[in-house]
Structure formats: structure tokens, C-alpha cells
Length: 131
Image (tube, rainbow, N blue to C red; front, side, top):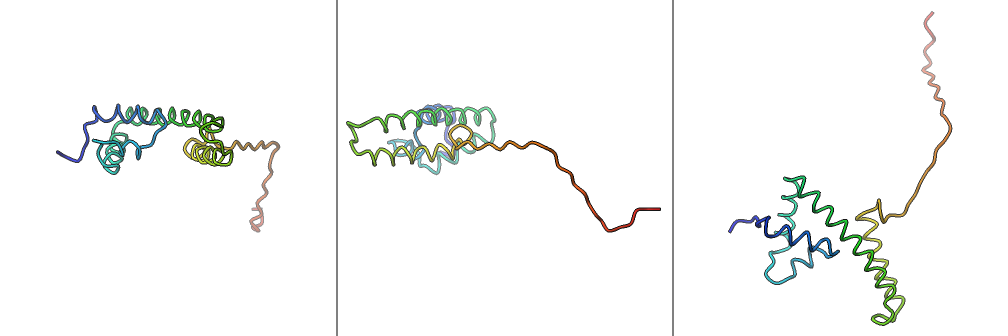
């Protein structure tokens, strides 16, 4: 068997997995799943060769990010499963920090700068004007 995984078999499984907000590392830890390096390599190759696959994987990742955000709320609200508020805060914070980096447009800290007015530039070359 070659190094490439059959795309029609593995891509749908990977997309479903990513949409659930789970990692490739977790995916590869399952029984009967190829090594993480092999899966990552194939996924990169599929995405680089086919823009539709790249868009599908990106969409799945973004759906997964939203799932992670929902899980953050569950972590924060789960006083029965984890009664320690400091533990819940750290777990939620770590996930939120990752979301900020993975999808800064949606989960990053918003900063805006509003600039108004004009600018005047004067360049003095030291060369006298032509007569």
C-alpha cells in the first residue's frame, strides 16, 4: 500500500471529526487509524491540490471552533462535574486562547482604530528651483 490514504474514505471521516471540534491528534489516537504524520501529510496534500477540499476542511474547522466555544460555556457552567472554579476558569481560558489564534476574526480581541483628518507632506530636496 502506498503512502497516500484513499481520500473518499478518510476525508469525510476527518471533516466530521473536525466539525465536532476535535483534534487530528485525537483522531489518530483511535484504533485502526493511520499515524498522525501520515494523516496530516495526506490532508495537506488534498487541500493543496483541490481548492474545494481546502474550503471544505476550512469550513469544518470553523464549525469545530464554534463547537469548542459552546464547550467553553459547558465547562464554565459545570459545577457538578468540576466544582473547582479555578480549574474551570483555566480550562475555559486555554480553549478561548486557542480560538483567538485559530480564528482571530471571530474570537480574537477586537481592536479598532479610527483615523480622520488629512496629512500634508513637504519634501525639501535642497535643490534650487529651475529658473
